[in-house]
Amino acid sequence: MSLSLTVLLVEDETPAAEKLERYLQRYSADIKVKAICDSVESSVRWIQENQATIDLIFMDIQLKDGLSFNIFKEVVVQKPVIFVTAYNEYALEAFKVNSIDYLLKPVTFTDLSSSLQKFENLREQMATTEAKQNKIKQLAEVNSGKSYKERFMVKVGDHIRSITIDQVLFFFADGRDVYLITTQLRKFIIDFTLESLEEVLQPKNFFRANRSYILHIAFIQDVVTYSNSRLKVTTLPVWDKEIIVSREKVGEFKNWFDGLD
Image (cartoon, rainbow, N blue to C red; front, side, top):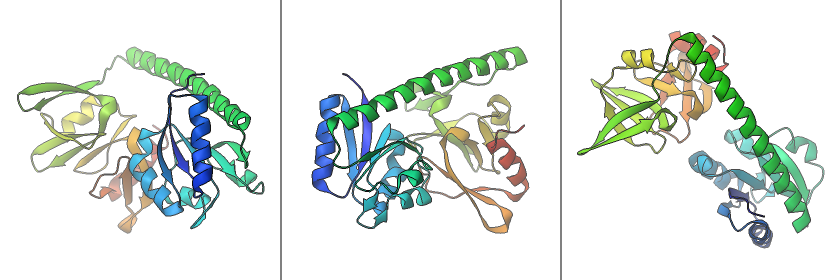
């Protein structure tokens, strides 16, 4: 059976992690373990910086610095999780987060195979649903008579590149210059103002948060209440400067973030 997959293992027992990795390779040689984290702290840090590079997380519950449920309190986990634990009393709590299965140690190859098959089925269902949603969205945009930019042309030295809209983390104004920031955190100057960008970007996906930023909803990791009734936004990947939704934009931002017109 061939399954192409990149996974994160959250496990503080080396023999258990090695056994799980062997089973994954036995299931499919195309499964790659991207990293192994052995604590809540290291898991939070790794997920914050690398979540976009994985498809699935295998997670023990009892880690050396606490329960793995604490990870979900520190970072927005967007990937499905298969819990692997010696304790059956946490099953209900596990399914309140991103869990798609709950395996009890010692895990057998049959147990793992069943969980991976469940993941494959869910991924196929999600892909089908997403394709249908994209088709409906395209039809709606065609019927509305308005089209939006799908790509931006940028210069790299003497070369010209085309960056598609799904590679845009956000747009950022610094003085008179406006930059396109990619999901790899690369900066490119573009020949637009933020005001002109607002006219050509799909408003359901992009929002003018303040005088300097237009955000892409697909890469917003977290939103927290900030001082003076403002909001602080964290992107994924993480940008090294604060992104604050200005006070007069907060209500509009919440409606946009909630999918309301």
